[in-house]
Structures are given as structure tokens and as C-alpha cells.
Image 1: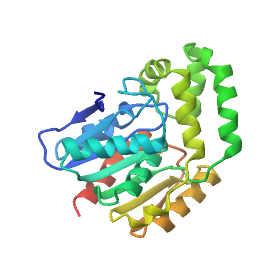
Image 2: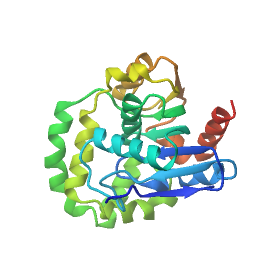
Image 3: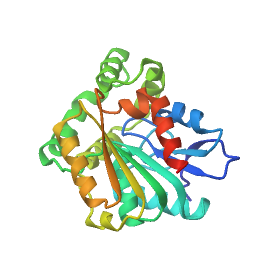
Length: 250
């Protein structure tokens, strides 16, 4: 039987926080934030389907969400203090909240797209097909890494795990990211939700954030000044951890 794989910090603590990483990244996306929170919280960092070290290939956002819900039910008593997710992880979190609106007390959704793009989805397979062979070349990986604006100390983690993602999985989760649309059942979510989007992010991400805010009744939209995609949880992990701690202490 396949078993969800994850990394955990502060497992002696009672209050549980779960973070879902971005597409093409892995648990180390949240490593610094987890380390900062581990004195007070049990922080669990699942590895999403189709990524390096995962228990299974990527199929759909809905399947990955259902898998995490089943794991929370089986291993964590069916409810946690907070769940956070970025980009693809944010979409999976939205799907979790659509399927089980009471799974967490607080939800933190960062840079999640909910406006499907058929054109982008159609271009992914040929684009990845042409570039996949270059992934193991360090010069190409460095270019990709710089485009993500991730702090330089995470490059080796990024390079190692990018090389371990199969072409089929990369196409699958990228297409799912481009096609995902938030469900109407999200309106039944009871978690206090906080939606974060960088000021410098694309119009599609900003419009998605507005859509999410409208569907999640108990939600607050935060625009992050001067920040681009992913900078909050990855590059400003100290501020991110402080935000999480402040929410959980309410």
C-alpha cells in the first residue's frame, strides 16, 4: 500500500501545521519556516504526488487532495490547526477545503491560480517535451532557478529534485495547475482563510485571489508589497513564520 511521504519538525508538539509545497519544488520549500515554528508546533511537510521522493505519480489535484485528507483522518485525528499551500500546493489546499471544509482551523493560500487557461495547458506538453532533456544540465537548471526568484541557498535542493521528476509527472502537474478551477463547494469551508498574493504577480494570480476571496466567506485577501510569485513563503520565511504564529495564537 502506498503511504504519503513527508518530513516533520517539532513532532513532540500537539498543535499540527501542514504546508503543501509548490509545483517542481519539494518539502524544502518550507524548511526554514518549519524550523522557526518547530518549538511550538508540529510542522508536517508532505511531498506532493509526482515529485522527487513521492509515494505515487501525479494524477489530478483532486486525487492528491483526497489522499491528504485520508492521511489527516488516519494519522492526525481528522483535523489540524493550520494548513498552508503555495501555487500548486495552494490549489491542492483549495481542493482539500472544497472536499472537507472543516479540516483545519486556519488556511493560508498563497499565489494559487483558479482561472483555467486552455492555451497554456495545450502548450505544456510540447514545451516540456523540447526542454526536458536539458533539465540535468546545470546551466539550464540555473536559468530556470533564477526565473523562479528563489533564494540561492536552495539551488542544490532544486537541482537534485528537478532531475528526479519524470517528464510524464512534470507535464501532468503543470497541466493540472493550468487547468484548475475552484469548486463551488469551497463556499462551505468553515476555516478562517487568508489569501496572499504578491503585488508583482501576474494579473491572472490577482484575479484568482479575488475569486477565492469571494468563494471563501470567512477570508481576508492580503496584497504583499513589492513581492513576486513565491517570495513570501520561500524568500521571506521569517515573516511567513511570524504570520503563521500570529494566526495560530488567536
